[in-house]
Length: 448
Image 1: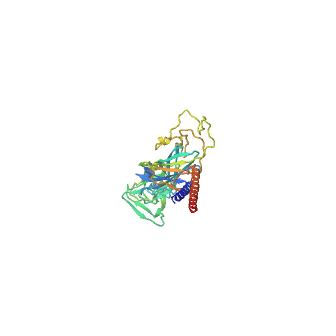
Image 2 (image 1 turned 90 degrees about the vertical axis):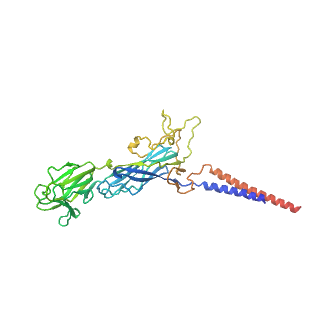
Image 3 (image 1 turned 180 degrees about the vertical axis):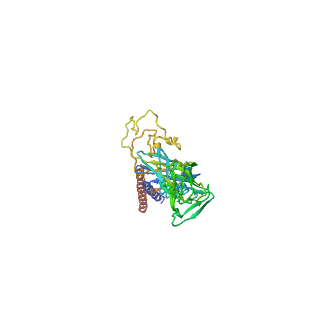
């Protein structure tokens, strides 16, 4: 009976081996990994400090290499509006991903978010994500590591009326009044004084400002200073019309004084009542225009906190269509030079590789350079990466489908499957032979 059991065990081993090879022959889905990089931003729209989280996810599929950054605030502190702006301002973020291995260069994920109408201190919404991509023409191991991050704010072009905010401060002698018909003051209110020397100070960010008030009989003259300099000579006279004639009635929401075009940035305007006569401040009109590029004044500087690690992706390749003959030098993608080949970039990588002309041009593509050994031209497969692994990544790998290994099947799996099948056949044949001999032995005993 022990021989019979051995025959059955041999057959079972063959069946198990065949089943195992069938399972591993299926091609797993593309593995997708992420890691988290933390940044601390200061100055500009960041003020004294804002913390950001960037979740970096490389993706390689069908000959395209893409890097996505999902952005979020890490706590309650936010980027803030630096002034009064019409709807349409933009907050733009640009990151840097350093790439080494089979490719050397950078991708620059970018993204922007349009903002609504803003007042100073309003929270700015982050872009939902940043991304950048490039075509790939080689196979091999690629290493992705996050680098610097830049935050820029571009104010919308337009005009905003400002009234009753913390950016307008009044000295003693002023009183707030609610007004109605028939005056039609801005938002139906204004500030009034009859005290000589009383001032109203307005701080703003923009390219032009206007002082809005009433024209009416017997109003006193007004002096205006801009950024510490007196800019009214002669004085503003709200008691007269624009032609210089004395007013006989009241006109509301009049532009009593307007600045020339200014450089974009913070400015301060002061309205001072010169005599003990009535003076009004209804509102200020802030204009922002001519901004084609994000102003340096609003730019935030962001520094990477700690070492977030890196992600490596190994891209499979097809067998080259031609092989070099013995003694023949295989072709390379770049013309020969007198310089020695570059060492493996993965051995000498730094967090901030040297800049080149492409960095200044913001082309956002990968610069392909030869590795240390000559490489034949090959065509990558479209099956995606076969392996993805972390270097101190904070988020575990999550394969999307297929076997939970993240690796492509080996090329020699059909041989393993054949071997398993042979073991199954041999085990079955051996079991049959043992059974036949056992029956013959029993038959012989009966004859005796």
